[in-house]
Image 1 (spheres, helix red, strand yellow):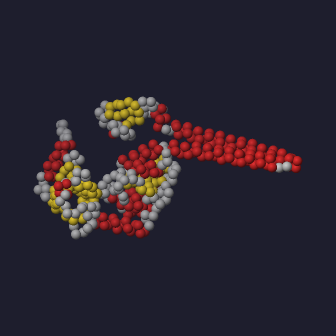
Image 2 (cartoon, rainbow, N blue to C red):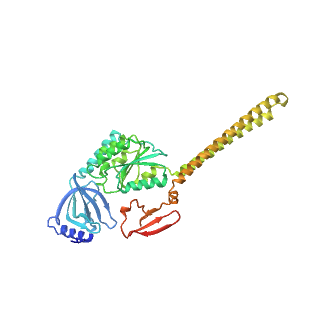
Length: 395
């Protein structure tokens, strides 16, 4: 028996009719706390209404928003009249507010509790971490979801800037009731490694999605970390208690990976600079010795100091020869070591991998394809060989 497959649009249309025609859901009076509020250029207002246990997406269209006698903001405890609707394009269930009034409480419990916790941790010194992030780490630990976009952004950035650095991933839950405890345990596990830097965070989301990083146990775990911590939670405009407790806040996970690494090409340039400076310092010393010798030769009485001068000149010349030999040997050794490291780095570079017969597969969005299971029939891909790119299509 063949089972009929329905289009997504048909399912969403059915849910829309089912919910919007419901007698109870078409006329509701609800109350809660505003969170994650944003105003669209069209004049519409989008936000979440939350209480201690749940949250629902809400919207208020421009025509109704213009009639409000106050300016809604995050933390306001409000009462709203409206209906349940379905936004077909995204398949989201939302509450469409038609009337809104502010409650006698000027701010909601969730906002008030968060501010109280923030002040408490501030007074205890939990936000006092300001350790310097190492410039040249050999290993970076990352506490985040093992499947989210954040870890792939971090790994790609580190590999692009400095492929020599190793990364230890500690996968944790970053959302849900159990996530604060899981993140805390992840930070403790990361501190048992020999990592030089610890990145803690996740990708963007609503205020509710990021709430685990506002948990007290997470903030205290970040503060207690023996490894310097870079907090990378959400987008640039998102702030949480984890940010304040860390040693450094990054606007995004990608930015965290950039702050934690120094590009390999920059390190090699610095190393070459050190070698050149050492050569210049040795040459300055040699020039100073020759200048002193010249002065002594021209200021002494030849009749009285000739024998002494000849002896000292001979000794000095021997020292100069030894010094020049030592400098030449040292510079040769340093250059040899540098060339060896450069050869090693060139062998592990992405181009070298391609030259050995491998290829790089990217999708239509130029994102690297890590697993063939994610490819679908008909999907277009690009194959990067050592000398040329070719487009292909999955059969």
